[in-house]
Image (cartoon, rainbow, N blue to C red; front, side, top):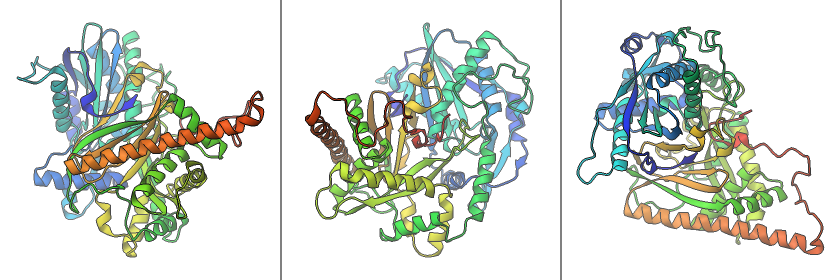
Length: 536
């Protein structure tokens, strides 16, 4: 699995098939009863933004998706049955929202489609030829963008779209979903789960599943995927989130941590380290950028450096970003906001938006240049603290800070976010749908250049959604070069430290200080996978 731009997906030419809700399912969705309780905090923000954009006639492109390739025969009916089982299993994907009340400051109203009403059918897309000057790959990108723009919206059901490009040797799958019902972790798991269900349907078709309980015995075959057997309800997660926020006092440690970080940085949330050239309040079309920070050998060196200083690899990621930012800004300390998964026990494989934000702040320099090793312990400790802060929904802290005049409301519009994902740790890793996959987002508009840092078996790399203007692209060019240089310097530092440690006894085996001894458990970093939480 890699993260990148939709335009980098290049399936072989073939016939296109969409999986669409049956007429009966659409009718049931239209008549679905209102479900009590508000949307989650992040959903609420998203739905208000959607309602405003809908009212202004703008394009809603706040969707995210994934695509992959599978070998073997294509059976549209089997894929439709697999999708039906998948959506019945995940309650959040059976919801849509009436957003009319958002115009007057009210909450959107959730509607829940009964599980036994869900059904899909394969629908061939009429053969289309790319227009003059348009290649097949460009047509695919345009077709998927138009498909997701039309389907992936929160005010109707289904707010997602699944389809396939079928060739003689196999087929490629594509999936998109409105962000109100998904997150990065969900996207990284979705096609592996559908792949498994599809494989089961090829072997043993079963049209008898009609229970309203997605875990009912009517589906006897269970699941062989490497994940817990349950898929917790995102609606239950939302109810728990609101209850936790309501019972959190204004002086809770998590609230104080947010307020202290914001107060120390002039009442504002972080922005990109360099000026992107946009006037306040302005946005520009998104351009996806990516850069490799370390190869496999570099990863091994940085792992060793982190272990030698009692830090996890996540701490090394934040140390590298902080060193880069402070070098560019001249600041002595660093303040970032990270995305943290909130998938506790029972919600490991839930499809939904199960994320929170937390501040990460620590000193970087006392006036002179700081080494990577010197910053590592503070960066690691700051991220550990951020995970504790993330135990309380960020909106509880935002409400207190806004009411108390601590936070400038203007900085809420487009905050700079940082995510770190260890892509080796997700359920489905090792399966074709996951290993051949691409995770992408809708390319709307932005005023920032948030950083999505990812690790797989081969490299560490960063993806960023940047404003597509000459000034912004020049700033991003400079930033990515500086960030790459920071991690290169860290590897050189690790190499020099290893050489120095080996010098006294070159023929003796060495264990870095703080590294696990033989037979010790390796520190589990699966919680660092944004949106994924503990995965087993």
